[in-house]
Amino acid sequence: QRLLGIAQLAGRYADAEELCGDLMREPSVLKVAALRVAAGRTRLEVRAQRGESPAITVQGFASLLLEARASGAVREEVLLLTGISDIHARQGSWTDAQRLARAARDAAMPLDDVELRADTIVRLGTALLDTDPASALRHFEEASELYTAIDHRFGLARCLVNIGIARQRVGANGEAEAAYREALAMAEAGHIVDLAGLAALNLGVLLTRTGRYEHADAQFQDAMRCFRKVKSEPRRLATLYNLAHLAHEQGDAAKAHDIARTATDLAGELGMEHVRVAALARMGLAAIALGTMTEVEDVRRELVGYCARTPGWFKGRESVEAFLARYALQQGAVSVAAEHFRAAAAALRTDPYDAAWMVAECAGLFRASRDPELRGHLAAAHRTATELGYVPLVRRLGSALRVSSVMPVLPS
Figure 1 (tube, rainbow, N blue to C red):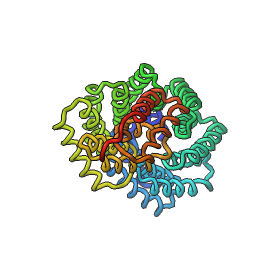
Figure 2 (figure 1 turned 180 degrees about the vertical axis):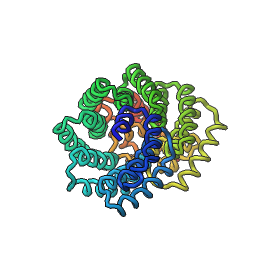
Figure 3 (figure 1 turned 60 degrees about the horizontal axis):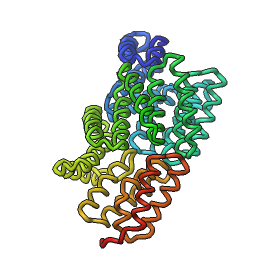
Figure 4 (figure 1 turned 135 degrees about the vertical axis):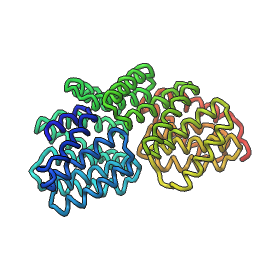
């Protein structure tokens, strides 16, 4: 079990999965319910890190959760609850994610295990990140104090990455960058490859948003090397998605299209449908820029069908709504474009960058609509982007403001 923990921590997922198999064949393990559940849980975690479908992982966790409860294996119950919560959070099912994360934290509190308690607090913060980033930040800082108290450097570095994300969400970009760089230095010093990749990925996202494109690309390439080394396909997918965004922001539609296509294909292989749909929308935005209208129509049909089947919000849906709004504007359907914009604006209130980016993508809407409320979004987004140092968005939104102020109102 110690070897398994080391292999998982170091990101050697193939070795970890092989060790799980060895454990699950060990007669002494099979006789002890807690050990049996632990081996099964770890194998599912490792397979998920290598690209197993989330649906299969949740099904496996749920089965093990019943066994853990029946045998009184409370520690395993906590770990399984946090694992299921994490998957719900990544799929945008925040209510379920938060409910399960709170149940895990409450179950962990009576246990004499500081690391486990800190882990559950981090998971609860992760579940809150998209709906209440200020509260998430408080949870991450609480967990950070616990990790520091027991000198758990891996937990602290992981916590710093989450602190960086939360600080970005509340507009503290300088503090976010410092947290990412500290996490990256810790991970590199400890030779924790997967965590170094995660810190580099999130640092690259921040650098993209603030317009430091060359530095962002370097961080994404470092992240990609880390994730290839440990064979973490879900995180390689996240890096591809952000590389497509970087190319889009640089105005290289052809490159953005090619990377988004690769991300779409990989997400399909991994069974990560929300990410596949978001990457497909990125392909569609690039196709609009390239003028390949047959592909634009194909993307629109698939996205409209998906949205009809899946009405809830998920991370990446802003790309879907941006594409559908841009398409509607291209067809002269201003009111339809406004509906897509408003849906996104309502859902993105806790993410200042994505909210401002959505406004910039839909700049044509503010020229085409008579609605003063819509035009108010443009000025508000420009103020937000200026305050937070999102230099590329400041330029795009400033240009849209100038054009909007002199353009005649067009009929809708």
